[in-house]
Image: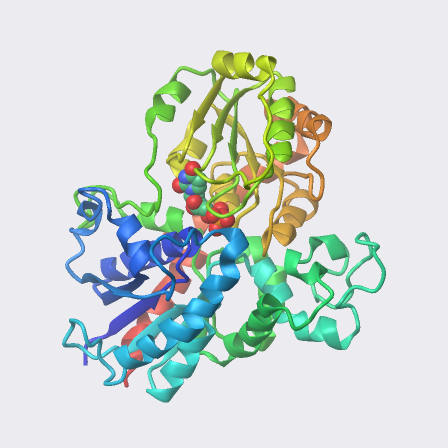
Length: 476
Ligand code: UDP
């Protein structure tokens, strides 16, 4: 029986992008892949004419869709994620079960599904896979360090570290092995700050912590050399790990001119990319631009936006700022001070969505003011761009701590949003870019290790080969 992999991402920009890269890598290895999107993500991914063109070169890649249970006009934004959780559980789960009832996708392919790769947060996928005896491999697209705190949640609760007693967010956390020296309460995922363990997100994560170790394996978007202390702890719970990242670099490396690559570059963006910023970047001096983006989900208040703006302008740097539509929460707004408008006209560029990987690789970019999403963090590490971190939620609080205290490639302004702090951090990091500072040295070393890991014989290269072999061996 030929292998046929069903890939099922969480319907959010970050996981979809990662899983599409994995789908392309598996197709390059000649595996048959069906990519299961929710109707809404699918529409947004392919709404542009030619959006599909990038995937046309992959003969063995097919797309299928499923409902997420939400009405078309639902914003699916960070502040409404519990609606998505309910929709997935009440509507998507039974449909997914129906879809797989005969071991083959009802809609198209004649081939039975021989392996499911599902996001670790889609808890129901394992129940369905076990019911139909289809091997399932989890892919957790958040950071391994973030995931490790999820997996340690039961232990934190048993030890009485969660919920927090008292309000000292700087208290050290003791029950996340491998992170004892640097993890504070404020560095745990944001949902840990609530006092109610029955909160639906905590319950979802506790279920995930129970289910992830039950699958056939766990794919991670990292490379052994970056996360080895955490990976060895994780291996005690999940023995079969496949660290195959950074996936975007892995795919680029495989798409050499000799490979049967697709004609056009594939798009993985749910928003229309505004490429005008690339011409703007071309006109800026090397390493002179601060790139600002808070990813696909994070939100800001009007006050925070103005603090960011003053901080950027007062730093004296040029800046390229992604202002995603609807990323400022509804509420009172005010007039933008004249000096901010003027400085932005002189040395700023604002776009709604940027081709981020290209932006970070551009020689004009010297610093990334980021929300510390895991994809953004990896993309910055590979391009050796230092980071000022303003983590928003989920794994981002953990990621920013590793950026500042473990990998030492940036600064963490967690829990503050103050123009003075932003200006100081930008000035401090920009001051180091051309020097032989610790940050520059750490970045160069991490970037080199990342690139080597996906080259022939590298750790991620070998782990991907092992994953492909294991998928080939899976039989229903
Ligand atoms: N991204 C992009 N253009 C933008 C902003 C973000 O292409 O203007 C991409 C970015 O390259 C990254 C993803 O969106 O791959 C965001 O994922 P991440 O894990 O960093 O954060 P999330 O959006 O999940 O919070």
